[in-house]
Image (cartoon, rainbow, N blue to C red):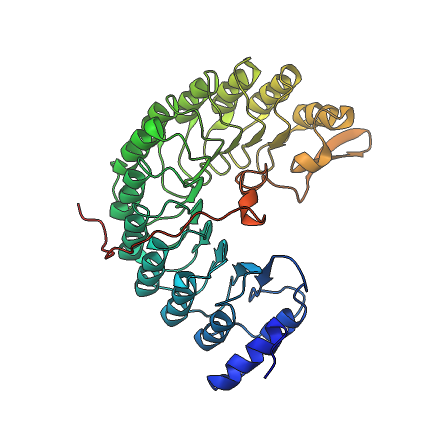
Length: 416
């Protein structure tokens, strides 16, 4: 049979392995571009129509027809029903000598520890994959340990997302230790781990990592239960770090005292450009500390979210005033705080003057009976810094791939 297209190849593989054709997968493959590199988007949560979510058998067929395909450089398999068996098929694809995959998105599937282990094993000998997203898979502490061990060997992976993966203190600390020596990773997300200790040992280790790491650009620490004590530890490392651009601390327990420490960092030679402090407890005094830092000449902050922080008029007015003195900060998100009339007027002026563009904030101004009010707008802080400034152009370009490592070592979880 003369196979000319990827869809025909897929149909042939399904026939060979007696796999029922997934009509949605076939539809996507039939619409694939005829030339150039592209990402196959087979997400299972299409909002426009119902789709047949991919199973492990579907992944087997898909991976087989991609073994010698150089044009598919990305796989978007979010929100499907892929389990450990499907992860094994993808691991086999990643180990194939002709693998061209640079990004693999498995967000919110059903992969557990065994699946994480085989994926980690395949990445020991893979030099092409740059982005791996596993958020929402319950790989657990042991699965994350396998991935941390892999990072000791892999020198090409640039983005790793492990949010909501049931990580425990041991694996969180292991990842921080690996990041002391790993020079490839640019973006790491470990949001919402299962941390039960009140000592915040992990914060000490991440602080030590930030003090020596010069390659990490983006760090997501949302929903880690961070208190002011943890923030104090973290900022000790941030003072010595000059590479981190995006710091995500949303949904923690940081108050004015913790923010004061962060504000001190912003007044120094900090590279931080995006900070997400939404859903903390910084209140007026915390907002005042941030405003003072924003107004300082050394601050290079471009985007800030302080939404839902119980901030009243005094704190929000101090922020509005700081923006008049600072031209660097261009994105500000304040919804969920107490937006009384003076605040509405101040931010209304920032909006009308063009100092705060409407698409770069989460509020919009409107007038009723001569009074100005603020309404919520659908805009929000960008989820990722990595990639939005050309930092991961290799994910979609034709740049030369790093060579595969010559020998794959036996993979075992890190031990402490």
